[in-house]
Image (cartoon, rainbow, N blue to C red; front, top):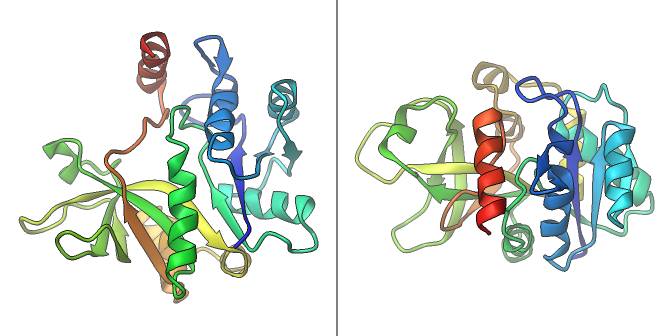
Length: 243
C-alpha cells in the first residue's frame, strides 16, 4: 500500500473565518497541522481552497495544491488534489487529515493506513475515542460511532454514526473525523450525491454506508483538539504556550 496524506483547508469557515491562518504560538494553524502530518513519515500535501493557504504552506517548505474554492466538501477537495498530484494512480490510498487539528498525533495517519492494510474488506478507515465526559452522550455536536467492537478489541466495523443520544449502558465512542480511503472508494464516494441519512444527520460518512462501502474504526486513547470556534482557538493557543 502506498498512502498519501492530504489535508483539506479553506478560508471560508462559517464559525471561525480565516481559520487556517489563525495564529497559534506564532505559527498558522494549517502549518501546525501540516507539520504533525509530516512527522508521520508519509508523503503529505495540503488541498487548499485559497491561495493564502498555499502561500503559508509553501513558505514553511511544504506542498500545497490550489483547488476550486466552491467544492462542496473536504472529500471533494482531496479528490481534486489527488488527481492533480497523482494522475497516474501511484497512491492507492489517501489519508484525509483535518487542518483544524493542529496538535493531532502523527500516529493517527499511520493508524488509518494500518487499518486499510490489515482489513482487506475495509473501504474507509477512521478513528474513535472514548467519550470525554458524560455530556458527550447527549451533545449533538459530538458525533457518536456505533461500532461492532467486542470488549478488549481495538478495531471493528462501523455500523452507524449519529448525533443522537445512544441507548444503554455500553461505552460511547466519539468519532474522530479523520479518514483513510482506498482510492477507488474515494472516487465512488465523491461521484455519489448526498444521501437521505447524510442530509438528515449532516454526516457525510453516512453516504458511504448507504452506498454499501465498509467503514472500519480503530480506537485511540483520546480525541485530538479540534478548533471549531473562538473558545477552541483560545485553548489551542494556551496549549502551544504550555507545550
